[in-house]
Length: 77
Image: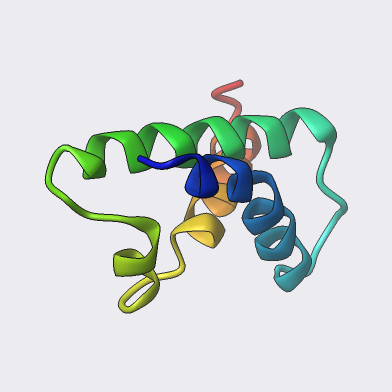
């Protein structure tokens, strides 16, 4: 994964959180979503897949934000 992708993760997570309506996100939730997205992209990179590839089929940053929110709402925090 290149540095541009890594540097872009916080901005992509914030934009995804802005698209989702509901209660405001805590800084810890956004940090966890950034970590989750970074880890998913690092795993995908071993297959030659980038965030741009995901952008063609799924909003991966939004999925990371929603996954963290769901985990917290279900009491898995």
